[in-house]
Image 1 (cartoon, rainbow, N blue to C red):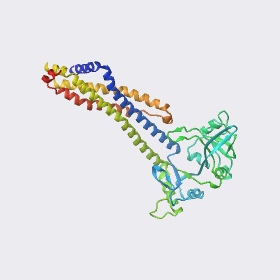
Image 2: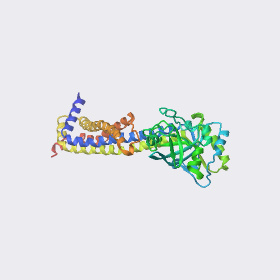
Image 3: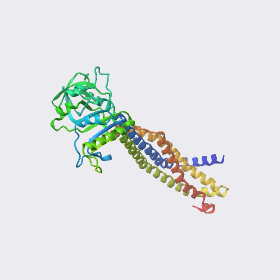
Image 4: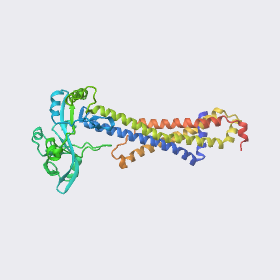
Amino acid sequence: MRVLRIFRLSLRALTRNKMRTALTMLGIIIGVGAVIAMVSIGAGAKAAVQSRFEAMGTNNLSLRSGSFRGPGGVQSGAGSLPLKLELVDLIKQRCPSVQYITPLYQTRAQVVFGNKNWNTSIQGVNENYEIIGNWNLDYTYSGSRFFTQKEVEEGARVCVLGADTVAKIFPDDDPIGQILRIKTVVFEVIGVLRAKGQSGGFGSRDDLILAPYTTVSTRIIGANAQLQEIQMAAYSASSTDAAQREVETLMREYNRVQPGQADNFSVRNMADIAESAAESQNIFTILLGSIASISLLVGGIGIMNIMLVSVTERIREIGIRMAVGGQEEDILIQFLFEAIVLSVTGGLIGIGFGFAVSKLLHFIPMFATITTIVSPSSIFLAFGFSVAVGVFFGFYPARKASRLDPIEALRYE
């Protein structure tokens, strides 16, 4: 009963000046909302990155010329040697943990069909890329298929389109069997890939055309064709490390890399890259949440400031209560309750505010490709922090009020 009476007194004191109470809570509302919104961006970005790597396949490997320098990418410095097509056969013969392999030639070119044209990514690969790239054909288009080993060997002018490319060039037509032109070379469309969707920070994964590498390297790129990459798939995720060691051993021998010398090539393990990317996104999420939590601290300082003003305004009231038998503990609890009510109410409203902001962010072009994720942990973290802020910043004013001298308080004008 005593605690309930003190709680009612706290509410009465807060509702006495509604505008000041609302403005004091505003700092907590914005702080909690900012933490939830920022953490939801980080969680959404992390999910997008993970989705990207899952779509690529966690048992995949990528071989490139030049040494891999972490976040900066592949550095083609002095001593790096261009990849040669003969490496594909060598890896097949000497790397038993590698199940599938394809060379990759890549360029951008203008694609024309009738009065429509579109600039897109042209990738020259072999028949294994359907499996290595974890692509699925869209069988809603009758006869949709991938090109065969024979078509690769013959340099056939056939191609498979990504979903976005189809939408741009064939918005109202069935693309299967149609003839389009890439640069000056005509190709028959034999297949359409099922959409993989957008990937935050990576652009569209479906805006591309796949064709036999023999055709792309000779007819599209021409004499200056450079093999950019050799992509591989191990038998399973558990054999990826073994496949990587086999390829690295072969490449050191092939490039005559001496003991103690840095590799002039890079073999990227997609599972390791996915793990590193997830760690980077976790750091990014923590950074965003930490920046947003500063506004919560500012809100806490606002609570302390208003509570100190409230103590000053109510000195005579405190003196009278203590003179008629009020205990220091009662005064302390009352003012602490007031601070906690401000932070808890502000935190609850802030949760709704943060949830709304996280959903509205999707309509901002910068975040359009990221699906924000509001997790229960971010809600509990933000709300718990707001309550802790209320207790921490409310304790000093409450303690000051409880330690007033009743005689001096009654004399206060």
